[in-house]
Picture (cartoon, rainbow, N blue to C red):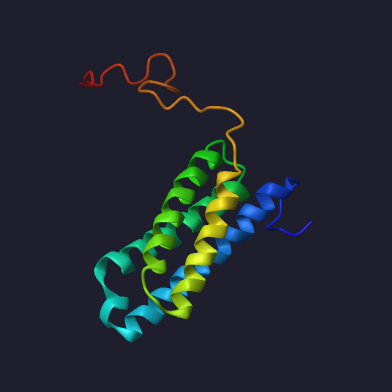
Length: 138
């Protein structure tokens, strides 16, 4: 089994899609900045950057077997769809390709379901005797 694969085919597919989306968004940023104009608008470039980042984090979370990978993937799916919608608004073949890749990634990430919940409430994971000198949160 290759280093970038797990035993779960759905996770393997999602990792593949996340890596492809990361790469596509980074390349699209360069393309957009080179063209300028509407392609270089701040909102588009920012969304492409955020999309690339969350795709990279999602792929890593899955490859590392993190217990929060499904939650990260849900955020990735939401971000990828937002990026796809903005890319779709620009009539350009390369932007349409980016939108397609983002949608494919979103679909693969939506397939990730939480296996168990991690308790992220205040005080969770604090050992007895730790954290007692912290002021109460409001």
